[in-house]
Image (cartoon, rainbow, N blue to C red):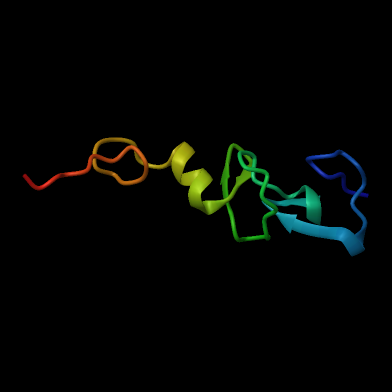
Length: 79
């Protein structure tokens, strides 16, 4: 019987969700940053851990720098 990577308990067929090549409980497949419940195939992966596509994966592993967008972006003002 496969074990859930999050809680390490056995995953039965009726409660199984497969993602990242592993079997999870539906409630255990959550974003590592915000803990939002994810759907199989509807999320990103980094170091074999699931993250929601927006905003968590983009914030943690997306491009960094000036004028990329998001909260830290530079805003041009008309004078």
